[in-house]
Amino acid sequence: MTDPASNLLPATNEDTCGPYFPIYFADPTLEDLTSLNPGVVTEASGTPIILRGRVLDRHRELANGVVIEFWQANAKGVYRTPATEGDADIDPWFYGYGRMRSATGLYEFPTIMPGAAEGRAPNITVTIFSDGINRVVTQVFFDTEDGNENDPVLQAVGEDAPKLIARHDGRTASGAEVYVFDIIMAGDNETPFFDDLES
Image (cartoon, rainbow, N blue to C red):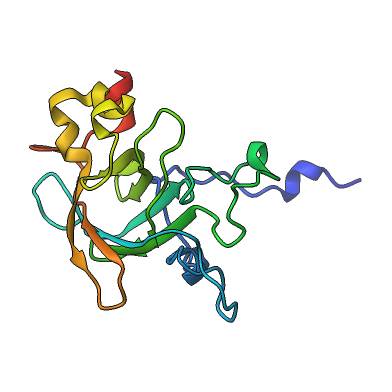
């Protein structure tokens, strides 16, 4: 009888962890939340916006190789979750989750202006993966929207609240409102991240 252990490969040494994202990690359908899928003639309800900016390292240089994920409510302030399945205010043409890769640290994300969920100002949760970090999470708010002064996250960060507010920067020829939001990973003017709020 053959010893089953003889077929095992020897363990390899541990290396620096990634993340190392395979090429299929890029999904163009997640890079624009204003449309559902190529070939489907429809669009999400709400005001189209473009959130653009830079992901900067501690030296204020563009971070190379980042993956950015976005999670938001629809225009009526409802998140698509198992708990909201069947909710009359769910937009069937809007998933609320997006993801993109950026080799340069620059990003541009078409979506719709999120509505205000209960007790919150309109916001988008942003998660960033990059070389040397596991994951950081923050939220972006909008300088044109109501409710920022009462939002619990903005209240929690206190005088750093302006670092979480995207500024309006005009409108595209197609009518999308443009907002600019830079994310600073560390150092001076670091963007407040959720792990900072918990410490």
